[in-house]
Every structure is written in structure tokens, then in C-alpha cells.
Length: 133
Image (cartoon, rainbow, N blue to C red; front, side, top):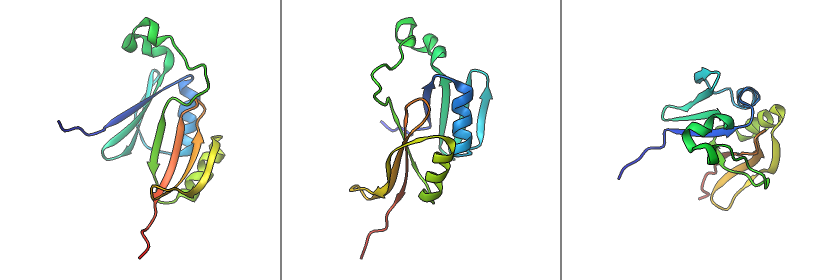
């Protein structure tokens, strides 16, 4: 089997405020912008979508679609490779994201910082570190 990840959709509490956050934090171009859904073109092969949690009942069924997280545990992570992680950290902070782990070298070879968006999703911005000779 072969697969290519093309789209990640986050279920959000308030589409308008979440879209405003992602506009301010990243400025990705929008490929879809309708009252029930916003989609960003992150790169040539991947999109990030935002859908109101209340609109998921028709996709997940009435029971699952009416659930919301209650334990405070993040429900997902968006891991983005960026050219300038310092600038990405500044934009996320200015947009109101809450930093949970500052920019630092990580043991898997990236320099990364972790934030929470307004809906509690984890956003990581990272840059691959050059291997030393």
C-alpha cells in the first residue's frame, strides 16, 4: 500500500477565532474559506483544515460528534518544519499561543518549540539541525 498525507483537519470550538489565530501565526494561503470550514495550503502536497466540532455529527455520528475533550489532554499535534524557528516562535507568541516547551535542540535531531493553540492542539515548529562533522 502506498499513501501520501494530503490533509489534516482539526476540530475546533470556534472556527472564526481559530482561523484568526492560524492567519496570525502562520499566514498560510487559504484554499477554502466557507462558513463551515477553512483550509490552508501549507505546501504543495499538504493542507491543514479547520472544522467546527459541532459540524462533526454528520461525519462521526450523533454520539461521537457531540463529544468534546474534558480532561485537558491535547488531542493532536501539528509538527511544522520551518526555515526560521525564532521567527515562528515570535509569530505564535504574538498570535496568543501558549508555549509549553521553548525552542531547544531535541534528541531526534531537530531544534523545536511546542505551543498550544486556542483549542488545545499542540503546534510544534522545528528546524532540522545540521549534523556536525
